[in-house]
Every structure is written in structure tokens, then in C-alpha cells.
Image (cartoon, rainbow, N blue to C red):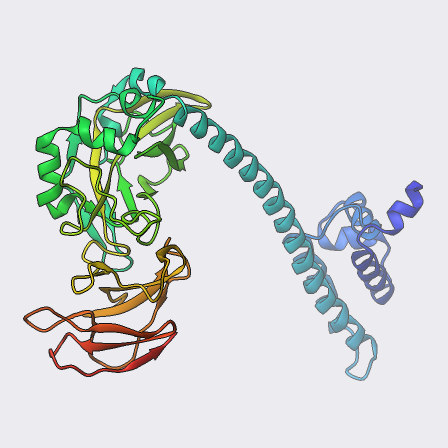
Length: 411
């Protein structure tokens, strides 16, 4: 393509606006420059489309148009032409501004995508080396100060269970056996008792870890959150000076964190921590690692230990005492829809949600049915008041009044 052809395709709308402006005012680029306090070369570049319009140039050219309009009689057709040119100037400025913003955003997205890809690779490489994590210098500034869960009214937990003397390589690296069971073994009986008895150590799948705010010696470094269960899972990367909240996920979704594919409860024997009575899932450790670019330089001085409970909230009811099984609409459980009573997203009371075995396709099945709560366990006696009537519908009672007000809810 020749230079002349390229110039013809450069900002054609702007070139036409400038040609119309010179025609209606009768000014050459040099004369126009003298009137709008711009250099003649700048005006020629605008006219040729070599420079984009800016807010300053549009303001100057609009003022020139206003002066030209003032000297014209009301009936002069050039008034309408000037008005159209002024409107076209404003529209072209908006277009040029959006174009520039899109270019910047595209460049930023490419840069962010590249950085995210690099960061994921750095995090994953470290996650595959538990022995390396064990050897990193320890920093108290990287210790979590709270765990948070909840969708609206957040529950903030600051009474954390910390494990100091534990090597991840002893948990993860052995070639055979269940790593989660080994982790439950290694944390010790006192920690297991704390996890069993203290709701502060119970977390649903989605949670947030916070560290203390600046001044933090690692504030200028990248910081990554990891969760160790059967393997070490990279979670969230925060760039320098970013927020001190890290999103995490605790094991798998739905009831797959509690139930094996054959429908049995995952117990991690010989310990009695995870049973149908406790409704607890696997134990996990959360910790943070600071990076200097791709090189890990420090980790939390202790591991924060917690145990999985519930789906959306630890108090979720998804197990039937009557049947000794999850509240599933069919068998096998891995292909079933699971009902569970959980805290309402807004306001007091409970609703019944339904999800797949692994937590996918989750819906609030009783939202806004009426002003009362829809319950699986109802009244002061906590009587079970729920049953599937088909694979697509169920009946439930009201747990605010204890009255059996059955209703059908189609899914």
C-alpha cells in the first residue's frame, strides 16, 4: 500500500470535518492557526488526519465556529452547516477518545493476561515442591490474621488454629497412601480435638484469608495464597501494594468433599473427626508465600489449620437422620441433585438450595415463596420436615413456626 493510499484511510471522518470547517469559515490552515492559538503545522496535521482530535483542539475549533456563526444572518444556510460541523467535532472527539481508551485497555489486557499466565506458572511450580516450601524463611507478616466466609453478612474468624512444626513434604511427597489422612495424623490429637469442637475452625468451600495491612515488609512483592489438603493447591495471587484479602477454596464443591463416589462417608479412619455425626470434611492448611518475581522468598511462619463443613455455610443441613444419607433425589449420588437447608442470602431465616453432587448448578429453590423460612429441620424439636416427591420436586415445612405447611417446589 502506498503512503498516499494510507493517508487517505487515516481518520477519514476527521479529515472531512476539517475540510468542511475550512470551507465554511473560508480560512486556510495558517489563518486558522492564527485564530485558535495553534501552530500551522498542527492544524495541517489535523486536516490530514495525522493527529487525533483532543479536547483542547475541539474546544479551540468550536470557539472558532462560534465566532464565524455570530457574523452570519439568521437566514444564512451556513449557520446550519456550522452547527452540523460542531456536532460532528464533538462526536469525532468521543470516537477518538474511545479508540484511545480501547487501545490502552487492549494493551493492558494483554499485559495482564501475560502476567496472570506467568504468575500461575510461578505459583504452580512452587506448589509442586513441598520440600522447597518447608525450607523458605518464615515471616510472621505473612501469617493470616482472619478467615472470612459468607455472601453478605460476612463471618470474620480471628481465633485461628496455627500449626508450627509440620513439614509439608511429610504430608504430600510420600508416593502412596492418602495425603489428607496423613495430614490429619500429623497435626496431632489436640488439633484434631480443637477442629472437632470449635466452630471457629469450620469453613465452607469458599472463604477469604486476610493478612495485616501495610506497613508490611512484603507489601512490594507478589504474595500467593495456597491451600494444602491431599495436594498443594495454588489459590490467589496479589500484586505489590494490592489488597490484603486472598480468596480461597476449601476442597471440592457440594457434598463431594464429604461423600465418596460409592455413597459412603469419607471418614479418614482411625480418627473420628470426619463422620456422619460431625458432618466434617477434610482438614486443610492455608499459608502464603512471598515472591520476588518468579522466586519464592518467604512463607507464613505457621500454617493456619481448618476443616471443611457445610456447602455455603458451616451450618448447612444436607444429611437426613431418617435415612442416614444425603438429601438426594436419586441414585447414584454422583448424578443426583442434593437439597440442603442454608442461610438466606439476605435477611434472617433459611432457604432450601439444590445443587449437583459437586456443587454445580446451585439454585435457591424456595426463594421468596413466602415470608417464612423453608426448613429441613423445623420447630423447637428440630424435626425433619423434608422429602423428595419426584426427581424434580419436593415438599418441606416451615421452620419459623414449626407448622407442617407442605408445599411443592418445582425445580
